[in-house]
Image (cartoon, rainbow, N blue to C red; front, side, top):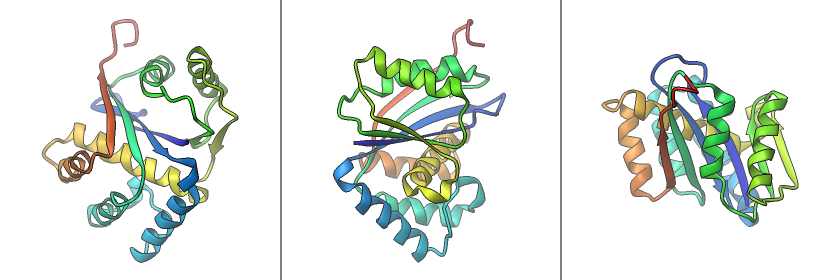
Amino acid sequence: MVIFIDESGTHKQVDHTTIALVYVEIANLEEFEKAVEKIEEKLSIKHFHWTDEKWEKRGKFIEQILKLDFFVKVAILKNPIKLAESLEEALRHLVVEENIKKIMLDGRKPRWYNQKLKKVLRDKGVSVKKIVTVRKDESSPGIRVSDCLAGLIRSNYDNPDSQASRWYDRMKNAEKIRLEITTYPQKSLA
């Protein structure tokens, strides 16, 4: 199993932050990534990135990825947050599998980020062979899917009457969201 992790809204002082974990069975990783690339090609998208696309393309991309073999777990946090503490708490609840082969993180992460992730995994007795930071979204279709899902879910919580809610509901109906935790910072985190 490979896990792709991306966040959305961590820079904001209001609304919500999401930490999305997209799970892909390792046996299907190559097929999954090729399918994502085909979807992007069909939609004339060079490399999907949530903030770069308009709703029309976002919707078409989401519609197509819902047909793929993956599921997502997500933590929804109320801003403002202290990312280090919130990340550790969210991952404690989201990462429970033992057969993880690789975790791929979106973007250049500070050393503490990887250390928090490793600590959570060690505490759970999970051995991860490799935690990979993907510096450019273009190099990982899985990271692009996690970017899409983190952006979609955050948008749904920030604006429940927006187009995001329609696609969010379709994701839930397709049973792609396996776990969703909503956590609001305690006094010590604010």
